[in-house]
Length: 184
Ligand SMILES: CC(C)(COP(=O)(O)OP(=O)(O)OC[C@H]1O[C@@H](n2cnc3c(N)ncnc32)[C@H](O)[C@@H]1OP(=O)(O)O)[C@@H](O)C(=O)NCCC(=O)NCCS
Ligand SMILES: [Zn+2]
Image (cartoon, rainbow, N blue to C red; front, side):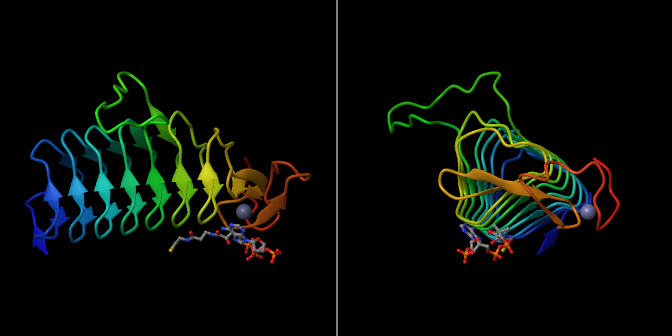
């Protein structure tokens, strides 16, 4: 692993565009690819063979697991987690001869949100803060904060606190978690 002056660690096989801004403490593993104008915050882990498209913006303490792919114009909040081989997409009508101009659009993955292994999030979707997407789910609509979503298409199954406590859909969003006492 090579270390840059500002405390960023980049594996020699990673490809990081010169215009990308990487925060201190961030580690970029082997064969990751970071595009032009990408902004990555501090203390992030960008896993093996992760792909970060040009213009993507990522907060602090974010984890992209190996093979995760994040396309523009996604923006990831602080402490977001994207599981291995999960994909945040940008075009519901892709075509080899046409690239969608996402212009001023922003697809936001909120703070603390989790996308499980192999999940696919379609474009034009906003993921609420701390929402949790199960492994292999297919997300086609916005998710609510703290919502737990499973399946293809992904459906709300309940709620999950940041301490991992679960609540049924009927219980709704707890104002105070009975496990960790967090209120939200
Ligand atoms: C969705 C999830 C949170 C459920 O966890 P859980 O509440 O402990 O659920 P259980 O394991 O008790 O399973 C409950 C039911 O849901 C099913 N299930 C579990 N995960 C599922 C998933 N991702 N998609 C569809 N069904 C799932 C189980 O088979 C079980 O069904 P059954 O009752 O008919 O047997 C979890 O399985 C998951 O997908 N976590 C993400 C893991 C991940 O991607 N990690 C990445 C880091 S490497
Ligand atoms: Zn809790």
